[in-house]
Length: 290
Image 1: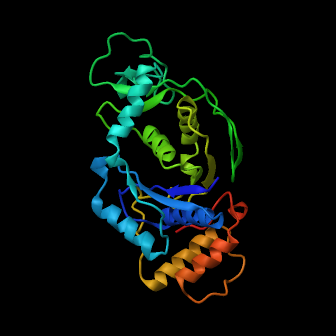
Image 2: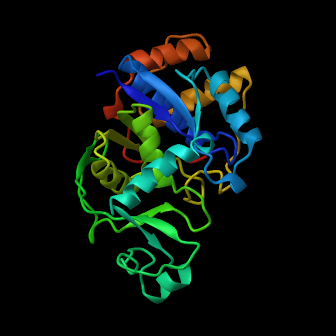
Image 3: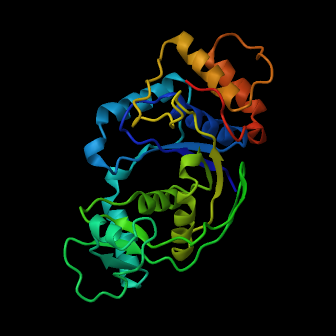
């Protein structure tokens, strides 16, 4: 089976050091194994997404030599596909309507673990969300973090379609990975707990199980995850910055034990890194901050 991986940024801001590390790791893992590397734009949260950020992300990837295979998929172009899946789940009683507000959940102590209050409710007020009925889960082996058991309390029923009509991330990512024949996921460890939910949905939909590798996060000096929400600085695209940022990312990924015998050229550096890529050298924690 051919390796098929992906990088799936949300266009809510430009690429920064943290997202570059994820993009680079997923790219190198795919190319080292002779596979395909796809780019998907996860733009479901339309109020927070901006085409200018999407353009910036794609042009930055190109500038850094991270060329993707196949056409870029945008989640905003897929509403009918997602509807097909959640309607099928509803018809098979594998999902159900839920009109619980956040206040309702808080009052019942069900914010973090849904109590199935609406599972058999006859008269659900509108607008209603759609929840997935979790019936099966399974542990998995993370390529970096080892065996991952199901969290205490299990996976609770989660949202597929929000009350405001927006498709939930869990539904979209599972359907997209299936439609794009993705079989390898290399992403940040902030998404580790989401894997349980995605695997539960994959099992019910009879989708193939994927392999996962969850990378350590790049932290800001205050200890927070480096992200667009914490106003992480965009990476520069001049030749000097590109080479230096790639070198820094490779060092953080544990891939540079010695200075590469290449000129200061990103193309040669990526070729060097692809041939020598070893995911087992990626550290559990990135101590360097930015």
